[in-house]
Figure (cartoon, rainbow, N blue to C red):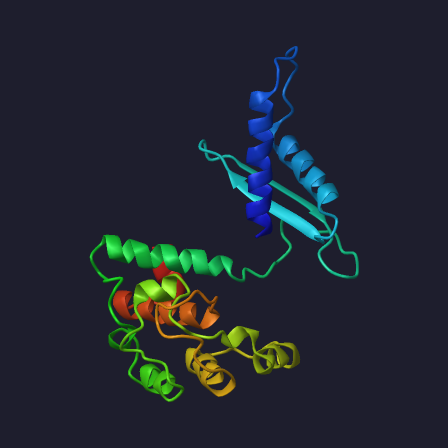
Length: 219
């Protein structure tokens, strides 16, 4: 999200410059310095955000980077090499991959998910009342499949904190959804943000491409 905010700020800055009255020409600072200056300004405008990092590639292939703020509560400075949690940016990549597969006629967005994921997962979801024969790929993309969100349950958050090295399987995450939540609505009835829905989309991508999700997304 921070990268999107930074990019938006940069675009807005360029737009303001384009609309400003003409001024005497002065040498433009190097682009990399301009990026860093705008990033520093954004940090001053949003002091509640601990830090920002940005990586930009121009049409000519040149790369500009910048970082500002702190990386953790100890005050360690943010840098362009600081690892950060990718989090829900993954959803954008998953959604784009599904739509690419649709463009290639490899998936029907209105297909029901019980025909696209492993048989054990529809059976597991059905024990909690989910109508997997009615939930569509399109509804998962739009967070409208009626699924709750396993990633926001106390059970999940407690385990993430107490066992940070635990590698979660899809089945474990779906099982947690079933154990800790109930369906929020009938399929297509309402919007409700669901990490679990995108877990299922990842499984669908792997089934169609016969590749691990990371490889399929890159391709």
